[in-house]
Image (cartoon, rainbow, N blue to C red; front, side, top):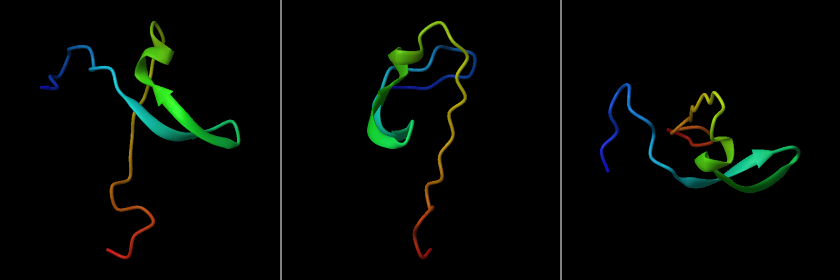
Length: 47
């Protein structure tokens, strides 16, 4: 799976904290909406 600038992002599912609870979130849940994705790869670690 290659990610290319200017191309649609591939669909994925990941655990997330949403509305006060943890649960699965899929990119397809936000189809037709603007989405900003970010992550902290070293967050909550002692690195």
